[in-house]
Length: 396
Ligand SMILES: NC(=O)c1ccc[n+]([C@@H]2O[C@H](COP(=O)([O-])OP(=O)(O)OC[C@H]3O[C@@H](n4cnc5c(N)ncnc54)[C@H](O)[C@@H]3O)[C@@H](O)[C@H]2O)c1
Ligand SMILES: N[C@@H](CCC(=O)N[C@@H](CSCO)C(=O)NCC(=O)O)C(=O)O
Ligand SMILES: [Zn+2]
Ligand SMILES: [Zn+2]
Image (cartoon, rainbow, N blue to C red; front, side):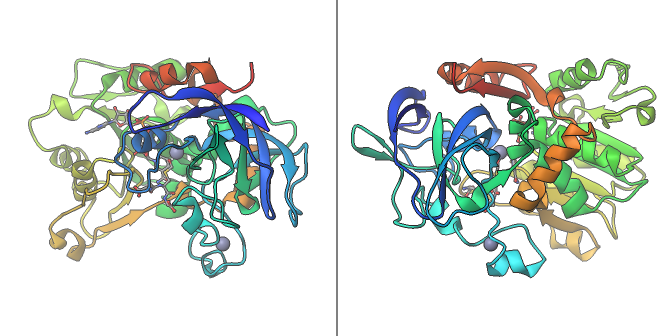
């Protein structure tokens, strides 16, 4: 079929909306009409050329929702008309990873999705004037129609608003799951969150619901503090002239961040600032930026003996983490998470239900709504004040 998609022809070159041919789904594949997609920082990362798996030309995008248009042979779990969320982390339920009970990673299609092709024939289903266009993360949601592996499709409630639940394809579950599945934060814990974008704020929300007693938000952009205040006006009473801004009565309210720290306001290293604020360090920290220096700070602000730091942010090719091994010898633990440890096909529908029951937030993370034609503006917005998630309407 002929449709429209945003093509990334080269790293960092503006995306171009073009007529694209999308081939029919082959065995074990599903063609989806994408209705809404959001932009995640990881799309910008791959577009920047710093992703070792980034291939061009490609169709980026991995946080979306849509409707099944057609299915290939052997596909039994979804049918045309089903509402779905494409999942960059597959779940086949049969591979060594899926059966391990120890991870949400799945091995079935990862080798193909890492090189931008479909598993069956190692080819792309996208082309422009005969030129193949690579898939991205097995999802490629910046297209009005995409083809994905059946193990990468979560079927969701037909009543769920697709313009909202598209966010459950990446950022919000990643933050919530980092707390609930990876760190397993206990009630009363002290938590530090580095980076208050969508992922970091979802960490804060998860920590709040897990019963954390203090949630320290760290960001170099004080506008992020304002976003939280605007989204939850009854919660926050910021005292902006202090080093640390305390939110008022936060335990009674619903978002989570109880204290804000801007490293730029301090001469000391940020890990020292946090250790001093917390009588020796936090129980759990989360790096939601993708900066290896901050990853070190996040580990080193953890309490001796038990503090656990979870790496969520994605760092560029060639970047490496370091710390004194003594930090680990003395009981700190370094972990990482992909998609918050959630098993995608099994648990994304459950997250949608939690949203429908108002048990988790989604709407609050959507700060902008644009169309596919405005996708370059949407990428620009990511760097501007006040932006968490921008949702694109794909068909206008
Ligand atoms: N592991 C996963 O499964 C997974 C899933 C989604 C996103 N990610 C990654 O998580 C990270 C966050 O994603 P996002 O969409 O929320 O990004 P974002 O750009 O919206 O948020 C990042 C935040 O970090 C802040 N920041 C930047 N440098 C900082 C510094 N030195 N100290 C303190 N704060 C700083 C920014 O001001 C911003 O508020 C990205 O690296 C993304 O690629 C990982
Ligand atoms: N190709 C990248 C991998 C980046 C990465 O770690 N991706 C996360 C999801 S980020 C979503 O916004 C992930 O799930 N990783 C596990 C996996 O890819 O299987 C790089 O090499 O840097
Ligand atoms: Zn993402
Ligand atoms: Zn599997």
